Length: 273
Image (cartoon, rainbow, N blue to C red; front, side, top):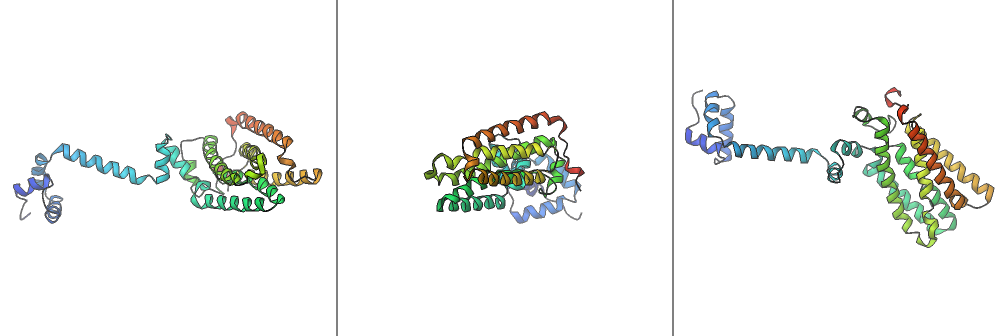
């Protein structure tokens, strides 16, 4: 080196008192000059350096977490769980927008005619099931490799995501249902069927991929609604008192099966082609 930083400049640099041009020149020199590095060490205020480093760490941590992750963490959810929830395909803005659009369509149809109410009550329980089906698995989750590598059992991961998806979807649909207050209690008659269908989807996911489980449940639901209509002549028959009791029983049975199979949750996305 043909020159070194003079002591006065070095002290001002250590205390942050130089201009940006001088600081840049000093830093460029310090990267290759061991002598000036050694002279700089005793001039540095370690407390100030620690404060700067703490600020850098805080900023990196704050920026590295997206807003949804940060919100979940503030609500008491661990950072690992928050990241897995935020990556759920059926909790993305585009998915939720599609759910909202479906709810709006169903509400408009229900408000325009008596037949429309049957359409709303049939469609509303299907939305949470669709969310559960898209919550996990190779077929639905573009980041499923990362989810597989997480320190979660498949059952726990599926349950955590499903609870979030079902809760969010039911909340969106319930808002739409409030617009059908004139229909009385029937405007909320989709809630128990929604829980029953979601629980059955989870139970079936112990054996097949959630996408296929959801598809089978939705097909069975549509078949049940149509059959009940044809047999009774009443489009709202699946949502009456008998239908509510059946939905409650099915929910209990599905959850019982799910708990009974928790130790051998057989479906593994790593084996799917």
